[in-house]
Image 1: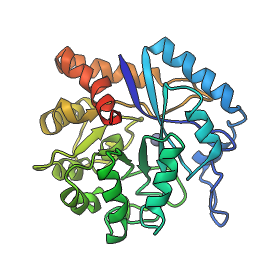
Image 2 (image 1 turned 90 degrees about the horizontal axis):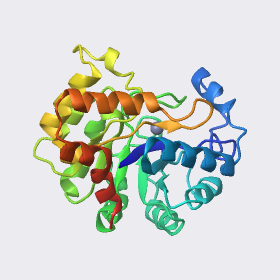
Image 3 (image 1 turned 180 degrees about the vertical axis):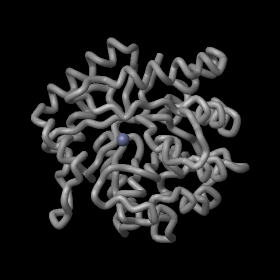
Image 4 (image 1 turned 60 degrees about the horizontal axis):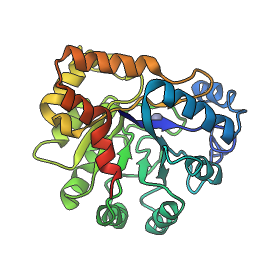
Length: 281
Ligand SMILES: [Zn+2]
């Protein structure tokens, strides 16, 4: 069994619905925006079909705008589609917003540290994290490199989360894409901490920008050593249109786990069990 721990639902009503008007879309974003004519129902049907084919029980979708009605109806259209809301955790109404998102059926939060123009570790965020800790709401963070016109590595450094991890030891934080270029920092953050996970999704095209010559297999090996198979969550970062499910990423990561002789029990945790536990209340 598999849970895909990171995916997106994009169409014209979800993508760019809160895109800042004073900013230009990057070429990569324009390309994405040109492929979004599909309805919510077409997206759902394509997803369910792909999940059936790949043996995926559930997929976790990262919203890109706050309290988005189209995203909410997509998530609520099947119990196999899990939603993570997004918001600015520094805003004074962050806790109220999370409460509304949970009422809408969301089960976690995604923070776009690099794109969101907020500091994921400032004092202002603490009420938000406190609420998430008390209510066992998992948080996925995209630090490091990313497309997006507001991307700024100054806020995208995951080290900002260090003081949050110590202040809220029961909070569950997942670093998407192995930290997307801040792999060393993510490994250091794990020092004597139980509340941090790495998540494996995406093309992992940050690897060539490292000063060490990693391969994705090296990254998995190191993650298994430091994070243990109990703190690694599989994902693909698929958006289903126009290219379909990212089977290549699924296959590549499963092959790496096999090559590293990961036991079937540990593989099950990475591909399914760890995320299932995070979603269970
Ligand atoms: Zn993503």
